[in-house]
Length: 187
Image 1 (spheres, rainbow, N blue to C red):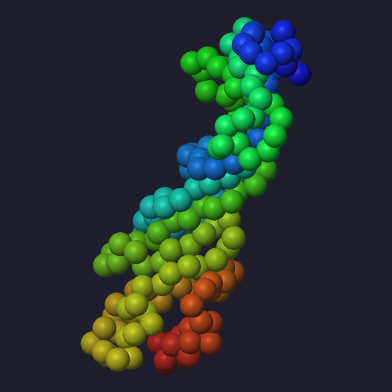
Image 2 (image 1 turned 180 degrees about the horizontal axis):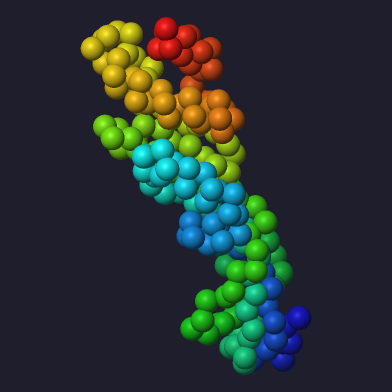
C-alpha cells in the first residue's frame, strides 16, 4: 500500500511498496526466467543444428517497487488523451527498475527458426503454439523438382514442429496441403 500525502490534486511524496501489472513488450530473457519450458524448446532447436532469432516477445508482468519518498502528481483527467473522468496518478520511482515478481501470461513469443540455407525456414509463436510461416521452398517444390533438397530442409523443421512439438499451422497455412506434401516427400 502506498501512503500518499497530502491527498489532494497537486504534488506530494509517496512512500511504501508499489505493486503493479504491466502489459507490453518484454525482454526474452525476462520471460525465460519465469517460463523455463520455452528455454527447453529453444535448446532443442540448437541441438538440431538450427538457430533462432527473437522477433517479438510480449507479456503481462507483475512488478514491485519500494518507493522511498517518490515525488508524485495527482491530477484530474482533463487531458484529451485520457478517456475516463476522474483522477490519475504519476509518480517518479527513482533510477532503479521495478523488480518483476512474475509473468503470469505470455502474450507473444515469436521466433524465426533458421536452417543452413534458410534464415527464415519457419516463424512460430511459442505463446500460442502456432506456426505462422513456413518458407515457400516447402510449399512450392512440386512446381520446380530441382528444389526438392530445399523443400526437405524446411520439411524437417515443419515435421518436428507439427509432429513432435504439436504446434498447429495458423492462418493461410493448410494442414491438408502439408499432409499431401509430406506423403510426396517421404515416398
